[in-house]
Amino acid sequence: MKFLNELGINALNYGASTGINWLQTTSNGQFDIASPADGKAIASVYKCSSDDYEQVVNTAQAAFKTWRKMPAPHRGEIVRQIGNKLRDFKQPLGELVAYEMGKSLQEGLGEVQEMIDICDFAVGLSRQLDGSTLHSERPLHRMYDQYHPLGIVGVVSAFNFPVAVWAWNAMISAICGNVTLWKPSEKTPLTAIACQNILNEVLTANELPEGIFSLVIGDGNVLGEGMLHDKRIPLMSVTGSTRVGRHAGTSVAARFGKSILELGGNNAIILTPQADLKLAIPGTVFGAVGTAGQRCTTTRRVIIHESIYQQVKDILVKAYAGLKIGNPLDESNHVGPLIDQQAVAMFSNALEQVQAQGGKLLCGGEVLSGAGYESGCYVKPAIVEAENHYDMVQNETFAPILYLIKYSGDVHDALAIQNDVVQGLSSAIFTDSLREAENFLSHWGSDCGIANVNIGTSGAEIGGAFGGEKETGGGRESGSDAWKAYMRRQTNTINYSTELPLAQGIKFDI
Ligand code: NAD
Image (cartoon, rainbow, N blue to C red; front, side):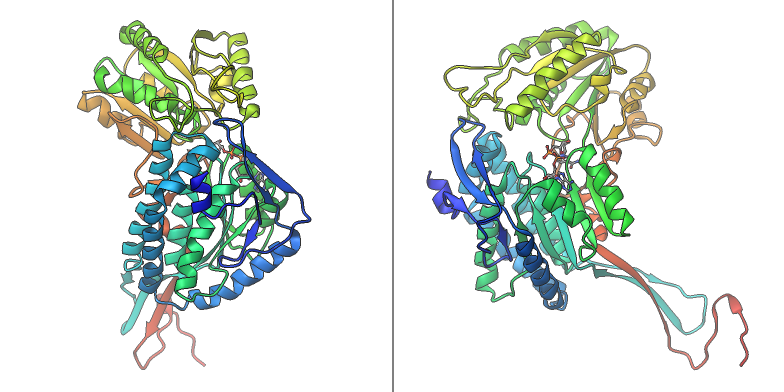
C-alpha cells in the first residue's frame, strides 16, 4: 500500500526508538497487526525488550539536560517544523490511522489535523509560559512564581485516538522543556512508528540529540506497568479505560509521581421540550455512531423529555435504518468497524445483559458478515430503551449502543439523571431556552469536564482544556492552561534590601 511506503512502515518493524535511531531487538516477541477494515495483515512490530527500555530511558534523561536549556521559543520552532512535516504527511498518515484503527478516512485526516493544530497552539504557547508577580509583605522584596520542566513525561495512549492524544501531550510537553516517552496501544503501533519516522526527519535536520521524543512498543501490563513504577518518569499521562487508569493513578501516586488521567466517559445529551430537533437529531446520531461508538466522548445516553419522547424515538430509529455500514476508507459509509472481534463480543454481550436487566432493543445489534465484512468487526449500531440505573447503562461499553431514557419534570430532573453515573467527561443539552441552558451550565448543573449547549457530546476543539471529572480521572490536556500540568511550579522571593526581615515580622536576634 502506497501510504505504508510513504510513512516508512516495513513488513516487520522495530519496537523501540530514541527518536532518531531504532533499537534492533528481535527476540522479545512481536505484534502482528491486521486492519479491522478488511481483516488483512498490515505489518508486524517487534516488542521492545527491557534492555531497550533502559537504553531509551537513559538516552531520554541525557537529552533532557540539553532540551531544557534551549529557550522555550526555540523549542517552539522545532514544534513548528514538526507541524509542517505533519502537513506534508497528512494524507498518508490519515489513511494509515483509518486503516489500522478503523475510523473513517475523514476522521483519520481530522485526527492528523488535530496534531497539526496542537503544534500551532504549542508554538504560540512557547512564548507564553507565564507565571505571576506577587506583592511581598516585606519591603524591598520581590516575589513571583515560575514554571520549570519536569523531565521525562510518559505517555500511554488508547487505540481510538492513536496519534492525536500523543501529539496533545508531546507537543505541549516539549515546549515546556520536557522529553517524552510514548507507549502507544498495542492495537495501533504502526501509526506510532509512522509518527516517529516523521519526527525523525525534523530532529535530524536540526541536529538535535536523541531522546527528546522516544517510543517504546510492548504490552500494557508489562511495558506500561514498568513505566508506572519508574521513578525516572515524574509525570505519567494515561489515556484509557477507567480500569487501567485507576491502577495507573494509584501506582504513580504511590511513588509520589504526578499523573494526568484521561479515562472512560458515559456521556449524555439532554433533549428538553425546547430542543431544536433539526440540530439535536444529527448531533445525537453522529455522537452515537461516529467512530463506531469508540470515542471517549461518544453519546451513550439521550435523556428525553416525555412530551417529545415518542417523536424523538421514531426519528432516531428511522435515521439508524439509513446508516451505511462498511469500509471506513469509502467515504460514502457512515459507520466503520470496531477495533477487533473482542470488541464485537463486548458489544453483543452488553446488549444481551441490558435486555436481561429490562432494556428494550429498538433496532440494530446484529454482527455483520459476508462480502465487505470479512474482518468480523462490523456491527449494526443499536438503540435501546433503558433506565439510568441499569448496570449496563451505568458502565461504558466502548461500542455503538445508544440508551434512550425518558424524564418528566424540568431540566433539574434531567440533570439529576445525567449526573447519576460515576463518569464525568462530556455532556450536552439541546434547548432554545436560555434558562434551561444556563441551569445546565451552572455549578448545580452538569458535573462533567465538558458541557455543551446545542452541540453534541462528541469531539472537542484543541483550544480548550480537554478532560473529565469523577472516574474520568480529572486530568486536562490540550488547550487553555493545561500546560501547567507538564511543569513544576516554583515560588521565588528576592530580597534587594540591606536587611533580613523575616516573614510574619518574627524577630530572631543572634
Ligand atoms: P485500555 O485501558 O485497554 O488501554 C489503554 C492503554 O493502557 C494502552 O496503551 C494499554 O497498553 C495500556 N495499559 C494496559 N494495562 C496497563 C498497565 N497495567 N499499565 C500501564 N498501561 C497499561 O483502553 P483502550 O481500549 O485502548 O481505549 C479505550 C478506553 O480509553 C475507553 O474507556 C475510552 O473512554 C478511553 N479513552 C479516554 C479518553 C479521554 O480523553 N478521556 C480518550 C480516548 C480514550
